[in-house]
Each structure stands twice: as structure tokens, then as C-alpha cells.
Image (cartoon, rainbow, N blue to C red; front, top):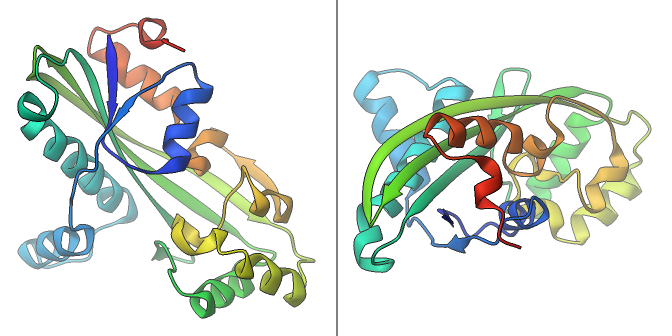
Length: 214
């Protein structure tokens, strides 16, 4: 029973490896900004954070599922898609990309608590054919230290680590020292909630332990 991760995220790959799973990986090629903009235009409203991450998780898994017969002939197992966004004071933040944006976010997050929303979509595939889909959203509250100095923020941003991660922080690397508490599944903050994925896989009739292959 194989796992195909619909992502090239190093953090999600690391999580699965630590959980005993060596997955195949495939970039879903989804234009995330365009997909969200199109859905919001169609519905005439701004998507709530949980809707946002679930939409993208399902699109990512679906995009890989649509081509799996060609990219991985005869594949039998599960496809996992995920997406994460950080919410603070009702505003949703993705990847900052630019140092000045990451610096402003850290100044705003200092001494505060926000919510990391993580969407998950799992497809069951039999001989290259998608036979089922389940999905869920997990949240974790993240509390940042109040005594983080401007110099520490500048040094952290200069490493480049916060530029390409949702919310501009990590909990499992350099950013972890600036986080006082995580309420919820800690792996949610890394990139995916492993406990949520385990339940979704079980709902598709697959035992989590059958995916262990490391």
C-alpha cells in the first residue's frame, strides 16, 4: 500500500517520514491564488479560513488523482493533499515571500495567539483509479513569546526560513524557540495533522499501520 503526497513541501515529506512512511511525491501544479479568487468571485464572498485550506487541499489531491493513471500506472494506495493558512485577528496569512513582510508579521504576532488552519484531502486509489475521497480541517492555536526582540526577528528573517512557510513561522526548526505554546495536534503546525490523516485513511478502509514502509 503506497502513499503519494500531492505536494513538494519538505515539511510535509519530513512529517510522513518521521511517521514511518516513505511517500512518492508529485507537484499538483495548482494556481492557488487563482483558484481561491475564482471560488470567491463565483460565490460573491471571502472564503473563511477553513474553507480556504480545504478548497486548496482538495484541488491539490484531485489534480494528482486526475493524472495518476499516467504518472504512476497501476498505483494502489492513497493520495494526500494539504494546505495551511495562519489566522490572526480574523486576517488570514499565507507565505510572506518577502523579508519586509515577514518582519512586519512577526512584530504583529509577538505576544499574541493565532490559529493555524490545515486542510486535508485523502483519495483512495485502486490500480490507478480513484475510488473514494475524504477530507477534514484541523486547527491548532499558536502562542508566540512576548519578549521576542527586534534583533531576534531580524536574525530569524535573515535566515530565510520564514519566507516560504504559512504564517512566516515554523515550530520544528529555528522558529520553535519563539513559540511558547501549541494547543492542538503539534504536527498541524508543521504542515499536516497526522492524527487527522490517520482517521481519514481509516475512513477509506485503510489501516494506518499498513502504510508504514520505512
